[in-house]
Length: 258
Image 1 (cartoon, rainbow, N blue to C red):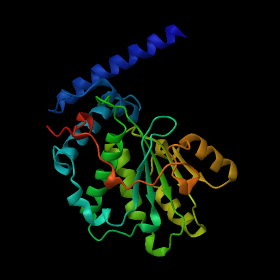
Image 2 (image 1 turned 180 degrees about the vertical axis):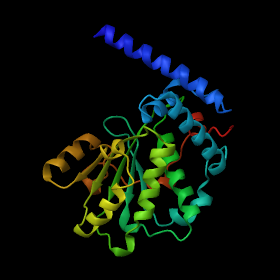
Image 3 (image 1 turned 120 degrees about the vertical axis):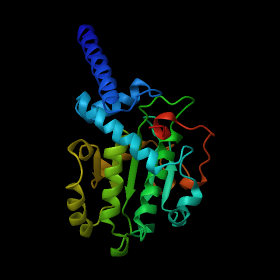
Image 4 (image 1 turned 90 degrees about the horizontal axis):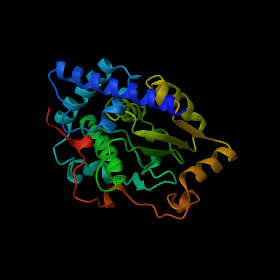
């Protein structure tokens, strides 16, 4: 067992070394990024250093074009925040921050550019809320999508695809688990369409809670202290805009120096 672990660590080290060299060949740099951050990109690309390097460089360019050095301010996404549809809870029993989407308060965005900024704002803030002291680089989040009481006006396959594609392309290995609650029958067709855009690794992290046993497991995995009262827990619902974070800028989230 110990020999196997040593071998795995040796292989990881070799892959990280090759990743850094591959990034340099693409006229970029991994300077300022710790190994746990780089490891996320390797895992997302099946430990292929060249593919991971391309993903890392694309991510850096995307961050530089999408996000200011200090992050996206509330004012820039105030139109979406006013719907009061995103809550930030946690930590869960496993120690991860939890982002809760109340879908009945969501309506398809007229301005897709602003909606994309809102997705980044929510993901960045959720990840940052789970950082204790100095960022490690491999912090993860738990997502809960509540479909209770939705109508056809709330349906937004495009928005859902955008959020998941951002997770896959620009937040590799950040999603620990995603729970979908109260899925109505008419949403099944929408979900099947969305799944066509999801990688296998992402789909394996998604749990559609339907049975009593799945509900019990969901409550147990989140933990009563993190779960809002409305979902059988003891916590109060907290809107994401009401959560105040320490004035620190996580390097692996917002380093924009390309």
